[in-house]
Length: 181
Image: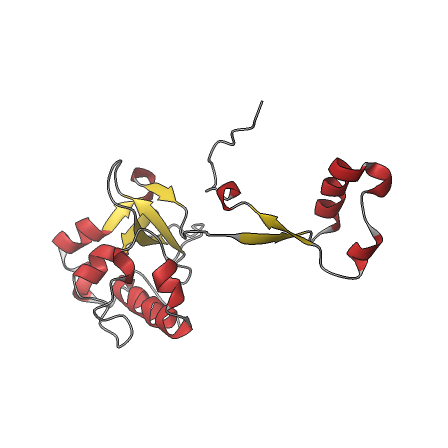
């Protein structure tokens, strides 16, 4: 299917209508975090689209999943809801659909320049397990704990090695890392 958006998207953009990544953002400092989708140099505010009643499929109609400060509720709805949302969003952004394209008031509220918003972590992370999935990772960590002679333990080649990770260590790209002194 050859999709075309009414929004002009640079040919080198990572976010044409075929690739609409979900995220969470604040439109301005102090405002409520909300889900959005990148399209070209814009973020489509999904809370505005939801409030306008444009998610009208059987799984998303009446849902408040896009009025949340993260994507957890939406992700918990599963693949059928994700497919419904993607189809709705692609349709709304297509050059042939008038609902957003021809509604200037809605368009101004829903489409925000990406350089004017603050991007946030898209999900609330309660906990996670980290794996030594590459030899480079395992060797670097092993060197810290056991020195270079014993960096890779023999069992690493035969079974997955994992450890409990701290959720607070997951940050959005570009965030300064504060290291202990």
